[in-house]
Image 1 (cartoon, rainbow, N blue to C red):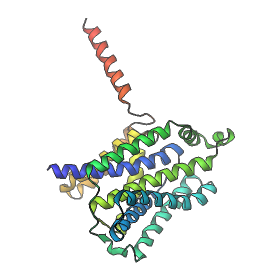
Image 2 (cartoon, rainbow, N blue to C red; image 1 turned 135 degrees about the vertical axis):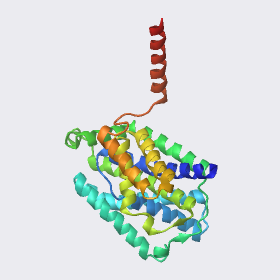
Image 3 (cartoon, rainbow, N blue to C red; image 1 turned 180 degrees about the horizontal axis):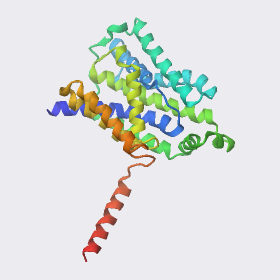
Image 4 (tube, helix red, strand yellow; image 1 turned 90 degrees about the vertical axis):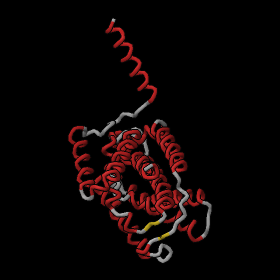
Length: 293
């Protein structure tokens, strides 16, 4: 039982790393990406190939997976973002890019095609994944509070006004996309070295949609909201796996309920702060104590 819970928690944290990166791009620049699974796949295959065939150190392979995903993001992001595609056109472009990556992985000899890569070393333990998750969330939160983060928020709110104020919209969006891809690549490398088997069919547009749904449900401007929504959306289907097809019904129902009663997402544009939570709890406690007197 303990091993099962540990496994679910590990998978949740791996997707948290990927979705936090996507939150920085989608939530803080306003562009929807439906091809995030492609960066996840590139990172997974890069890291797995390096450890599987060339016996490269796991952490170096993980870093290489993130950098390769960032490079791919630069290649796809430069022409699409330079063209200033609107949100819906950009989403379609990333959707096509994601499918192209999947087809490419199915036809390369080094990836072993549709057979995939079995027997990958299991280096991604829960402590390793948890440590990388904390680092990723810390970097993302600091990014959103930096000058670059404020520029991204300005672009999301009104890109015309942001451009008139001298903000380079292209640079802001490309920077956020590369950060998102690097996070996705690192998460993919962890995924490969936890599951110990990967194949192209794991990285479909459904996975991209699931990641985007977690960002939207958590709150477009909230890192902690994305973390909570990701854990909920990954844990519930896994816990209800014994219910077969009904687990997917529960997943869809949960998403509908959140969008109906909290259209702004679980956290909206707010972040969960331990300091503010403690202050709120302390003030409420004092008010109740005064009321009793």
